[in-house]
Length: 122
Image 1 (cartoon, rainbow, N blue to C red):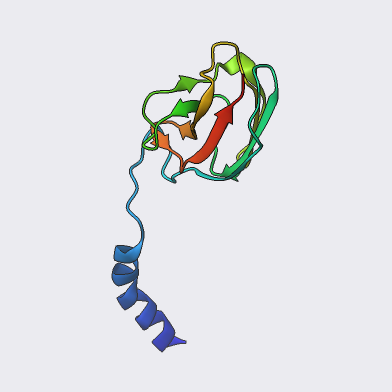
Image 2 (image 1 turned 90 degrees about the vertical axis):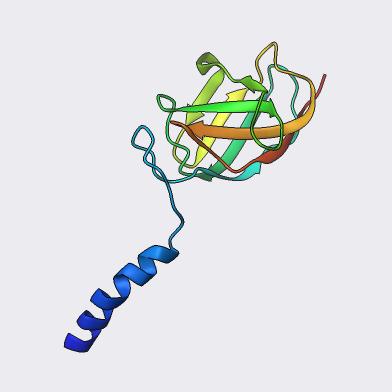
């Protein structure tokens, strides 16, 4: 038992150096990750996004129509969000959302998620 404890204490700084670096931004320290988004949708249709660490409606926002780096696009208004949990966001495509193919992101605090390709049909 003592050897395990000593090894654990000695390896802790080494293992910590292997962990991905994150910044604490507005209390958020984990990068949101997207796994799946429903198929393309028209204005007024429902879209479901699944992932992890998606925060909640008070700290997060959905960006559609962005480029691959998450720049530009259209932030889905809060009143278009149907439901929001840490693992799933459901929203209706709002009027004014840009038609065409692009990327979807979820932003929690100042942390931007991984992206998923997403299209808004006319």
